[in-house]
Length: 85
Image (cartoon, one colour):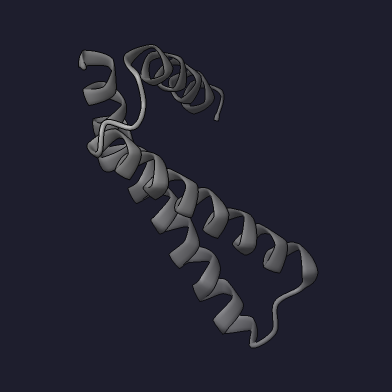
């Protein structure tokens, strides 16, 4: 469960808070403009979907519905993704 714990911590303390911050910032931009263009609406929708998937993954880890190897693969993918941003 070491890999699953590392993935859980990455989701809880980095990925999900970062997504929530981006959603909040985008929402504020949209509110200031009083009308969102299509690109911002699409970005907002994508962020919401990513957030929902991250929460779902976190619940799967907590309920042990995901095995250690899958946790490892997902963890490595997410770390690589973070490095590239």
